[in-house]
Length: 220
Ligand code: CA
Image (cartoon, rainbow, N blue to C red; front, top):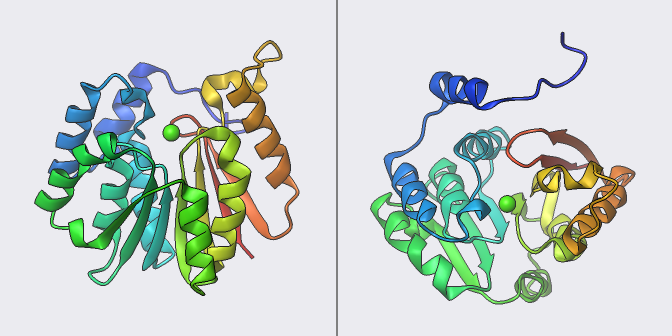
């Protein structure tokens, strides 16, 4: 019964949300707004947002990084879990998607905790490292273009302090990573990334089968 993870069908997921989801009203409103968008599937699920809030609090995170903000759901979730003096550097290349986020961040009272930087994330992260910020972050979330994951991961690991956690999204690529017939660039990139970090001795890791698969990597 407990030798492997159960597959969660719609009925069980609804039950799961019913008995465990606590979603801030502005998160709910932002999720509804994003659902109208053609790229809505890029948003993290509410149960994943809640897990990230738990992680942020468990590691006592104050300084956080996000690579791939989209319409700002995960950034809002993390910012809500941060202490008053906490800060999230949110990296994205799209003005259009992130513009949707700000009114929700403001109504939730956390806009001043979110430092949105519109630029390629590798540039933003390199600038942070050059500014001497290595070893000073506690939590990072990577959810952006899949071929970029090794670059983002390496930089986030540098910026993290020992004990800090990186959460990496879309590890399963809708199941494609385990499908021998799937060979899209994104699936191949994700397989390569997963193989890369599996034996990385600078971290300990756990792959959580939530949403589209979330790997947690803790810097040791
Ligand atoms: Ca994602």
